[in-house]
Image 1 (cartoon, helix red, strand yellow):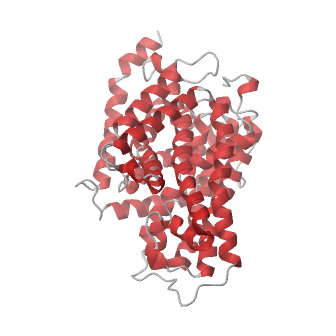
Image 2 (cartoon, one colour; image 1 turned 90 degrees about the vertical axis):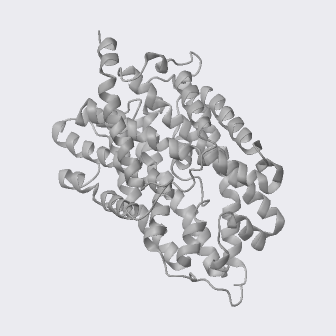
Image 3 (spheres, one colour; image 1 turned 45 degrees about the vertical axis):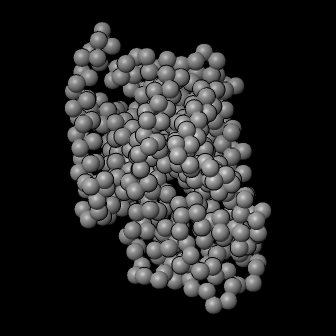
Length: 438
């Protein structure tokens, strides 16, 4: 059900830009893959991962987002296809994953700011600046979905401009002499793929604002697929350009895009890349507030959470209570070091994603007459097999998780504990649901 006034609806360009920030935010974060794998293997990972991991999700969102354009997106799909228990688990897993995801972006913003103002990371200054960024994004989101979407267009231009210049300079400059472009240690394809999965995930996040998108039946497939194409291009082209130029792969570490900018374009391009890093953290957090805040809203309207979370502003229809509560929770996590918990984020998100693919297949059988303005081609067999690629990638993540520790515990143990908590909370909230339905 749509909730917006036509004048405040998210347009196609705004949807594509916001989706880009929800799922990507630019090449920042690829440095670790380059250091581990070298240019050739990194390019292979960046081309194959979206085919197996992202494209199926983009097609899923295109079909279900157009067929069921309801607030809450994936929560509404799974709730309709698999029932209230699994709908709640879908929402719970997504919100749990956000805890390990959303603390990263204010930290990224502050780390790049420190390149220009070193005092930004002194003492508790970094946490204070991160909290101010979160507060600013909360205010921005309370202004409405249209404000976030339109702002994302401008932020995307500021972020991608330096990388377009960097890629062009790398192609047209004379190659560097005698540089090492292969990894100095054995190529870690699996480790690189896990990082790439994190950089390529989140396409379903755009689904939660379906009730606020103009002409969702037309715009969802176009917006999601357009954002995916933009993401692949902004990953592959700069890496391919630097591979041709011959920048020493052994020099890659977190923040090396700034060094690449200085090498090819001098101090001006380096500063532009730094500003792009700040925009990356700001834009991703801002767009994800838009996405995640609609999940408690939809759950409150369904009776799973207190009705206060469904309160919206009269002017912009933004769920201001949900935005404030979520922002407070993410601010409380700023002091925690989640940068190493990418694998845990992938496990939680991937588990929720599998529920979405099951719902896609079930709805094809249960509701064959449902109007689907965009339909994944290939009929029911393809609808069933759509989740094969993401499931295989998730299996690799679980295999990796058996051998890695996070905060002293195996990530699989942490993910299983959080999933079990969702089951407990679902049954504990039964009384609240019964009261809301009376």
